[in-house]
Image (cartoon, rainbow, N blue to C red):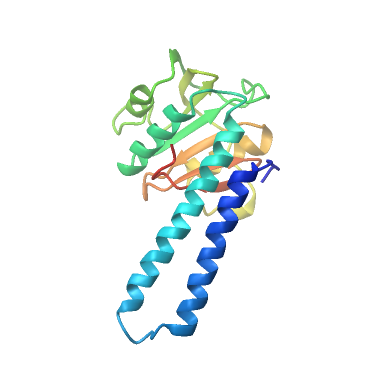
Amino acid sequence: MPNTNLPIPLITQLRGNLEILSNQIHNMLEHTDITKTDILNDFEELHQLFHDVQVNAASFYLRSFLAPFTDQFEVLSTAIQHLSKRNHGALIVIQRHDHLDSFIHSGINVQAKLSSPLLESIFYTGNPLHDGAVLICKDRIVSAGNVLPLSTKEIHLKVGTRHRAAIGITELTDALVLVVSEETGRATFALSGNLYPIMTKGLT
């Protein structure tokens, strides 16, 4: 992942949470009777703590990568949460420094102000544009139903078409791409040819 300087408060929070997580795991190893069902409650507490750490980190990194290029983080995160919850597949390309005209084609011109309802409606199952990618520049939806170049790297051939497209465009440009899996509802973002998980609950 590209380097991003974490603010001191977030570093302190992440380290504190990881220390708590480490201490709880140590206590479980030392004092928990794994033959008793009480261990399930301990697992649930660890899972919630780890989830909170991941949410905070994912939110910070994603906001940092997007902030210089769009002020619509809350709109995007709301749309991703709703699409993920409903298992509506989505592919959202956010233009950063690089122009993308030579890498994206066959889209329908939209030129509308970005909003969560509009973004969600584009990816609603049955909409003729829902299988393609949406292109966003700053605070506008430029086009929808776009076709992206697919990654041809062998390591990526086992992922779905949306994810290969997200990886493909980010291998060629500095764009950031948000992806929601239609099969699982799992949300990820692609940057510099790599995929990273997004914990949608509490992202905003």
